[in-house]
Amino acid sequence: MPNPTTYAGARDAGAVVHSRPRAVLVGPPGAGKTTIGRRLASSLNVPLVDSDLLLEEGEGKACGDVYVERGEEGFREIEATYVARALATGGIVSLGGGAVVTETTRQLLIPHTVVWVDVSAEEGIRRTSSSTTRPVLASADPAQRYRDLLEERAPLYREVSDFRVRTDGRPPQRVVADVLGFIESL
Image (cartoon, rainbow, N blue to C red; front, side, top):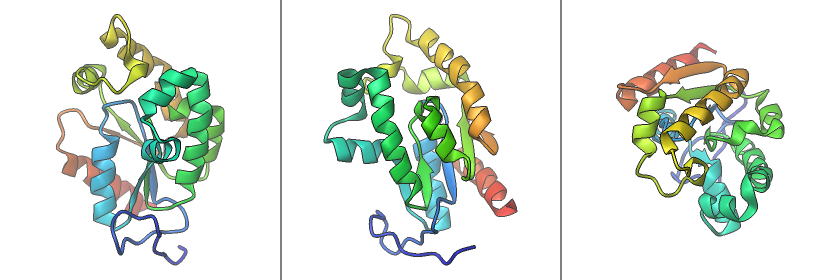
């Protein structure tokens, strides 16, 4: 394994980063990627790099606003650029729920350790139902839209992932323990 280095952009001073991410988290909206990512990064003493936050910082506006302004195709093109930047940093990388729909992003994920943070439709709907920041879920029937997204994206999450972990009814520390066990087994 390469010698770790300190990443200048790390939110936690003194965090150790390797030349590539220890793990990349993918999964649907509301699965818990950010929560699991924070705890995983803390456990490994590495930074969490969230591609959505990179996009928001780079574009100067919320992801939802960029999505509304550019449409899904335009948003995904911009997002792929920020995904590439995130994958070049190290630590734990968390990608937006739809990042895997872009072929470019899926190709970028090939050499990485990818964890699919998964959730049932019912739980994902519950977790995202009060969100007004997810225009991809905006619809006359948000619950059906969520189910449709899961159906569309599940094959893509499966394609890119090396490990799948469910978050339904499980405390974050248990999920993190499962992911750590997987990472340490590599």
